[in-house]
Amino acid sequence: MKLNSTQVKQTMTQLNAQVLPDDHPAVAQLNSVFGEHTFFVDTSGLKVLEPAQTSDMSGQTGEVVSLAEWSDPELTSLRPHEPEPTGVLIALEPSKH
Image (cartoon, rainbow, N blue to C red; front, top):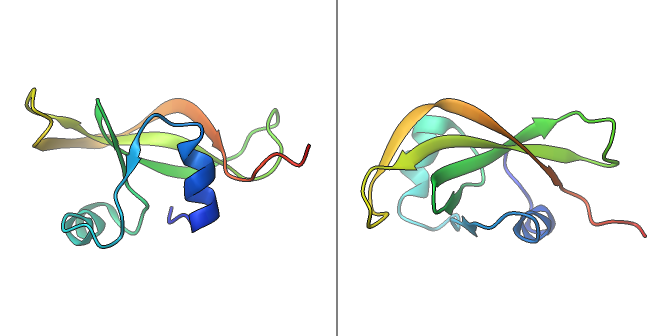
């Protein structure tokens, strides 16, 4: 799913990863392979969020899905794999408390 700037900021408070900006040279190629998403990279690889339904979190949530893993120790090359849900849920709306 493609996130707006508020959702990206909210995600970054919960996920230890970096967002790839839309003007990053790899984003066009990633979009052609994986579809329109906001892409995140962390020490284990490439991630996106997919809409998630959950009864224990209020508001819109997304589940972190792994799309690729690093193929080298320098974290310079990704090896894609079948999308793997991680079970990690992200609250996409700030808490109203």
